[in-house]
Length: 477
Image 1 (cartoon, helix red, strand yellow):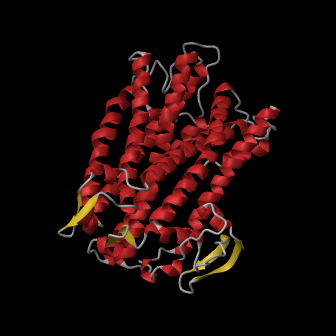
Image 2 (cartoon, helix red, strand yellow; image 1 turned 90 degrees about the horizontal axis):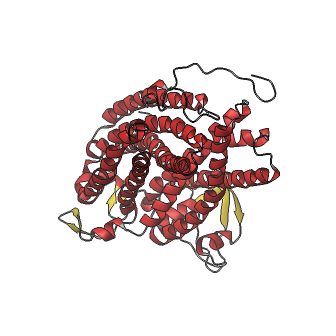
């Protein structure tokens, strides 16, 4: 296929499937915690707005959760089909970590998910809230085990190599490897941000169409508070994560910075933009700020960071890709901080709900949380190359002995099936979002309907009504 080797096709196939998969768990993690907060506020205040929002977002959570499980199963099988030598080499560590996820997170979610989705009028409010909280906890535990496994591949420790295979010697060292805390915090906060931007964009869409009620305003306000406080926190976590990468994966850090030459005693410039050329070993069209790279990465005016030329060519990650995926992530993160600060200013002025420029900005920011997660994931995984297990197993030695023709066929099938199945699923989710929450002003007992107290919670019945065109605030439909 297009002249790619079997190794490149195997990497593309895994990258394609994991890129689809990571979208759904990220939204699931954020929505589960959001639902817990909504139900807690409803129990405390008995404000029906929180209950209306809970019923609305729980339908979206249910569909998203199902797509996440299905896409994850497909990805897991590829460890055996496409990366059998990796499984043989490191399966004694990655296998148990994934099994722990099933035994803890999946069992916890399976035990309480049914009560959460179908038990609103069948169990007491305390038990229902406990079920929602346990599902949210399960999503975080699942992320913990997945990040522990991947972080060990990035910064392995607590092992010995016996007869050509990795053998765990200290499970605490395996799990709490050097990059694990930073990566777990970075990914969890990214999931919360992605959820907040998604919720905020959906509210902005309704406000732009004059669908203005207490429920819409509440979810818009809550999402923007989250962005205001969490986006700057993510920048701080990212700084610590960068320092950890500098210490443990210097080649990745050099590729991220597009830094080719050592500059002893002169400090390292920050390459804001440019085009790293792997063949010429230099940056084209570079825009640099002297010494700022040293200040950011080492917190020192004269600090040195490793240069790509310090590593053999075969040990360098693809700087062209990593350089730009990192900047996409950071650029979008900066826009998130702008969104939060702008919202605070408008809130102070009392015009948060009426600024059409801001509402459009919030709407367009909706997918940026997911895009930033994907860009960060590409930076992490491509930056680890040419290693599958950093410093221990090269990717070229981990791939199964398949031909390029076989992988081309399966990749083409994956692309067609994934866009058909998950494209339909995402389209349905967007239809749910367009319906918006059902707001029952002044009524303690709402009428029956999908997700309400007098009918079962049926996510797939929630978007059966046509999406009616309604006038916007300026009178245009």
